[in-house]
Amino acid sequence: MAQDLYETLGVSRDADADAIKKAYRRMARKYHPDVNPDPEAQEKFGEVSRAYEVLSDPDKKAHYDRGGDPFGSAGGGFGGGGAQGFSFTDIMDAFFGGAGQAQGRGPRPRMRRGQDALIQLEVSLAEAAFGTTREITVDTAVTCGTCGGDGAAPGSSPVPCETCHGQGEVAHVQRSFLGEVRTLRPCAACRGFGTVIPDPCRECAGDGRVRSRRTLTVKIPGGVDTGTRVQLSEQGEVGPGGGPAGDLYVEVHVGRHDTFTREGTDLHCTVSLPMTAAALGTTLTLPTLEADVVPEGSEPSTDLETSFEIDVKPGTQSGTQQVLRGRGVPGLRGGRGDLVVTIAVDTPTKLDARQEELLRELAAVRGEEAPSGTVKPGTKSVFGRLRDAFNH
Image (cartoon, rainbow, N blue to C red; front, side):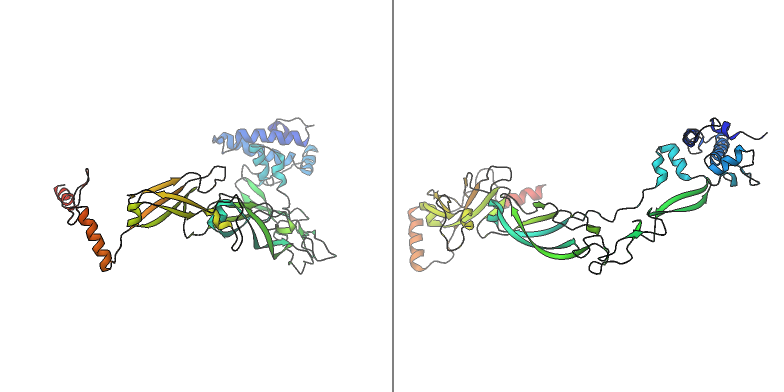
């Protein structure tokens, strides 16, 4: 006795296409070989697949309802001719759900967002500290002015692809253990767009954009450092098909300064003093970083401090540091770092006869004609360090 295909799927004879598909999904989740390795389940899945092949096809279903043999002489079991014809996407629907899976992705849009762009900009230390406004020149893709971005020559427009009929995809069928598996691939004729441009714009060759050099104004906030990126929204590359532009990122590189070096928000500088000034003490006048923002030949504003003084105490040793609070670099989130001034005492290397005479008199007065040197507590002589190294 021939098997009732409706009974195999567990549906009534008046079930509609949606009920038949839901029943097949339920059965596939239960009997598919990847889920249920039992041989009986494999045989059952073959029966379910053959039943669905017939009942999901309106012509085969009508033929079966009239009493005809839907399989003809092909017969066959699971994986044979009887299982051929059902869509692989139906099996995917059975496990992942959603009838949209079988619909494919459809044509992809010609208009897409453009890529972001990156340029580097070198600024001075003062510009990085206090901010500046600079004009930059960029070379990016912009919307084609001839075709307005659609890629077609004036007076023409894209037309539906004759190969995929505007779907952007074509079906490919191949034989597998499940029968004929149908997959959707992007149409090669239209590259998945669903339309073709019979008469491309001569200016942009159908891309909808051309390269152009333009000038932009970028505001660099105070407190930036090397590697900081300033974002200019929608100033990057215009997308294909006249799509929206990406963003432009300006990466800051801070140039070297003749006086100051930077560590975070702190500034460092080294001041060289003659040994006499270090011994007797003095007052130094040093420039501030603000002095660099005053244009050459112009007068600084009254509230702009371009110099400052530091007191060097008598007997200052080389390497002594003075920390001046709040004279460093402003932070991006407020506050300001410190300025660290390091004193370097210069020892004269060449003396004339009179200078040498005076120094010898000073040494005699201080009892330093033949100094033996003093080893500070906690330190070892060179010979002591060598002896310890060999003992270990």
